[in-house]
Length: 160
Picture 1: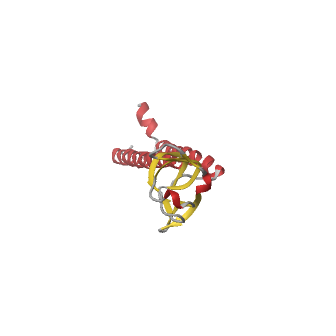
Picture 2: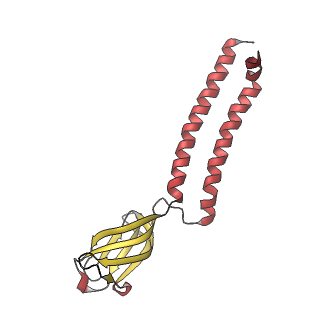
């Protein structure tokens, strides 16, 4: 057996495994961000004038929206504002809040809602595929490493 060839194969397997693991870590971290719904918890905004708009640029959709007056802690009824999801603002998805009552101009509001971050995958079928992508990526790393090991007889070298 050629020692140089065996060392080259071992180094190649090590590099492939290392690069694969680094890429796998990135895929796994990003999949967590795409599957997690966030929460908007008492975010304070200054209500714009009647007919004015406020944009939540870190989210693409809000649901179960509850708005209260910051100073009096009284609830603002949903007839006084309109929330529109998936609005393009400055070239990106966002949520638009339109104030429908002049009485609230420049009043600080606390906004609480279930929020879909920009990275969240809304479609259930696509969300189900994300963990499968990570699993198949991990399996691909194993197959590449094992096939190289078996093809070049490295296990025989370890046996003696």
